[in-house]
Amino acid sequence: MTFAVPTILAAAAESEVLATALIDGVTRGAGYLMMAAGAVMLFAGAFKMIGRFSYGGGSEGAPLLFMGLASIVGGLFLPNIMTFMTDNVRSVSGDPSPTAPPTPTVTPTNDPVEPAAPADLTWIWITLAAIAALVLLAILVFVILATSRRARQARERAVADRVAREKVTAAWAGVHSRHDELLRKLLHSETDWDALFFTPALTDPSVPETAAMLVAMRAASTARDISGDMPRSLLRTDGGASALVDQPYPKAVDAFDLAWAAAERNAKRLGQKGIPAAERKTIKEIRDLLNIAENSAASSTERNLAYRRAQKLIATLEHVHVPEKAAAQLEQSHTPMLEAAAAR
Image: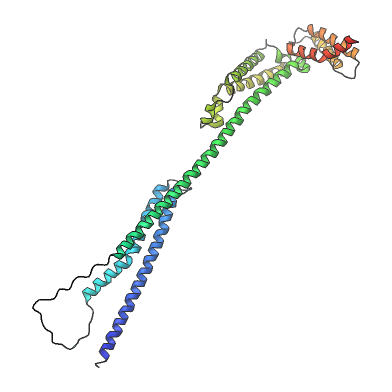
């Protein structure tokens, strides 16, 4: 019976050690899990705050950052908290100790005072260092992500500005192309004999629509001369190509385009209505003579006679306005033939 008591006490002490180790292991494991979860929330909060697809990310990411920091701190302190609570429970409940036979002791006149052992604060410094490292890591991640985001935004702005400049430049070139095409159409109407004979109103300044078109044509040419190259202000506007509509030259070209379309419709509608029958017959004869004059298969004598006869009939026209450009082009095209005939 004497040997059973120490055995029982040893078993109880061993069980207590195992329980303490188990509790300590579980507590540390829970602390590690809390720190891991806190790290995940910390990084998730940082990505939320400055992530590319997070609109208003600051309000969404801040709670995650605080929760992550709290979870990390809690995980670091959890083993110490559990140890403190276990020690308090033991001190309150008291540990069972075996009874031993009394031994005589000498009672000193004064109780000896043992020096207090210095407190071990190593775990506090380690914890604070770990927290500081995590905070610095979070700040570093935040700075890296913020810098990369600003760089990405700068690249995107540069690409957007380049695309906008290209659009504005192309739109400005398009205005010049439209203007050149309108001038080409006008020149064709003034030098093509079929257009002159069958839509004479298109070259007659006395027709209101034609007069308005000629005014718009001169205004567009003047605006082109004044504007020169594309204004630099267009490259600095947010409106891009749409800002062209407010520029004088594009507005003048638009007005020229509308006036030309109105004059062309009116000329096609009128046709030869205002030309007497006798003059229409003269026009038909002129057209036949011009066909002979332009026919390379005909002899030079026939072509020369046809050209001279056509010139005389053109001078007799009263209801068809023949521009100087048409007469000059006709004379220029037949001058070599006339010189060759004169040389013979």
